[in-house]
Amino acid sequence: MGPDSENLFSFDCHYGQWSILQRSASVVKKLMTSATVLAIVGCFACFTETASAQNNAPSKTSSVVHKVGLIDMAHVFKNYEKFTALREELKTEIQQSDAKAKAMAEQIQAVQKEMQDFKQGSPEYLAREKQLAQAASDFEAFRKVAQRDFLRKESRIYHTIYMEVTETVQKYAKIYNYTLIMRFNRESLDTDDPKKLIQGMNRQVVFHRADDDITLSVLDYLNRNYKSQAGAAGGSATRPTPGKTRQ
Image 1 (cartoon, rainbow, N blue to C red):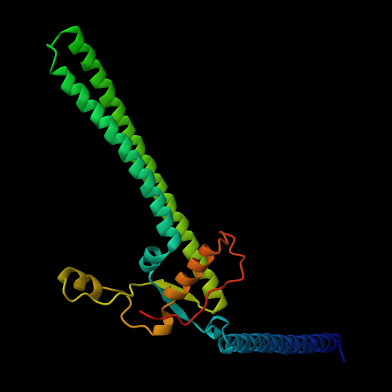
Image 2: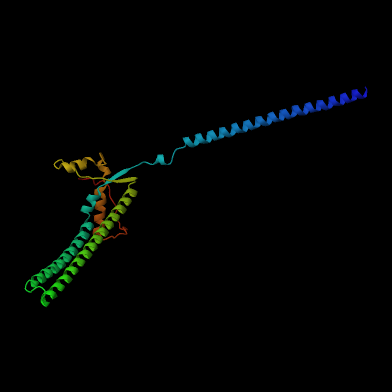
């Protein structure tokens, strides 16, 4: 072979090697592409299985059996002996305050009556006038302070009783597995009073079972604890008892 033949042969050899390299690179690229696709498909399948397992898994909240109870807070307050006793104590204080206010008012009236016996502008009249102004000022200040004090005491009574009732309701719910306690009115509809009838028809609770009403059970527990002077700690041997649904 001549030089040209050798160059041609050499070129053909190199060209053949280049073709082989190109085919190898193409094969490798296809393999890598296939592997990537398989990996993506595998991840997607894994994700689908995980999502499906999570969706099919039982929810913790769905396993909770809800039990609803009802309580008439107005009935409890009205019949709780401690609430009645505290209000009676406050009523006694108010009566004593009223007696003092009455005495102050009578003193003012007495000074006004004395002023009629003196001539206006006289020393005696001016002295009574000054005395009257002071007495009226003292009376007004006493009235305002007493009213504010009694409102504050009444608010504390309601707060104290409300907290005791709610704490008892929480104990009752925990013992007897209630998940929700709602307020309601357990009184029968008043068909004689149109206004009360309309109010009764607007009640949120339309129907309930007798066992759902825990009013009397809570009230009985509160009264027994109050009588035994267990105190706010509530660590006595008594505990709310169910089943008291009498009207």
